[in-house]
Length: 78
Figure 1 (spheres, rainbow, N blue to C red):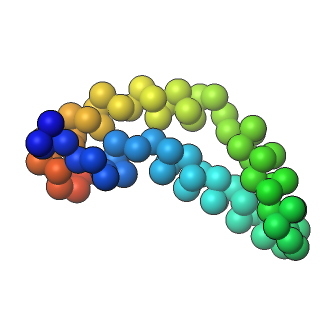
Figure 2 (figure 1 turned 90 degrees about the horizontal axis):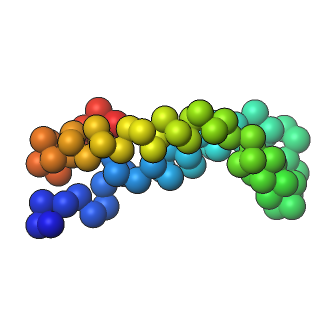
């Protein structure tokens, strides 16, 4: 796998999940006053991630891999 993009965020769906959580937590910015409240907000949002969103990420892996191969480890649209 010499061509494999080991550090490619295109092949790491969790990066999209973190971005999703970051956007959702941003809506709690005024309410979060300390680390415990941040942890509670993160847990709440984590468990509220729609299953359909996660399924979409999993289903996109084939096309993500193909895009990385075609880009020869360059940037893709993902």
